[in-house]
Length: 121
Image (tube, rainbow, N blue to C red; front, side, top):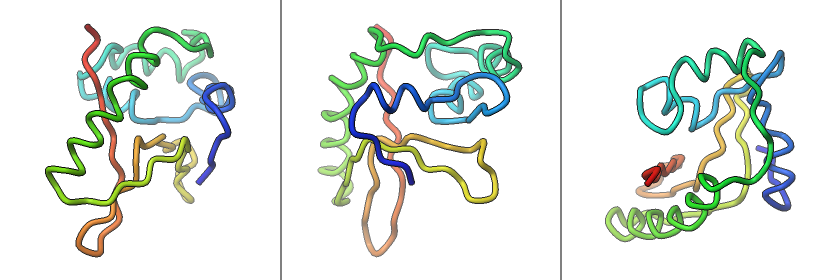
């Protein structure tokens, strides 16, 4: 688990291209055909063929505005306790698998990850 002090530090460690490519929530959604990117975008980035501007943008800002509301709704409906640090979870055996969950959930003695996706418009 890597926690970040702010969004700038999180963006700087995104690794959405080249040899250190990581699959996170946005790439997983794209691979499944959900979200503002496509499976092709994920593949091209992993091959270093598409560059991602590691800057804040309207999509990230929209997510930061709506994700807390969706998290609160999830917690209310499920009864889960949520902890929402700005972090990335890197799999011990598969370092390319590194989601940046929107929260950790604790319910009925089970720990889980919460990933929220918001509409593009």
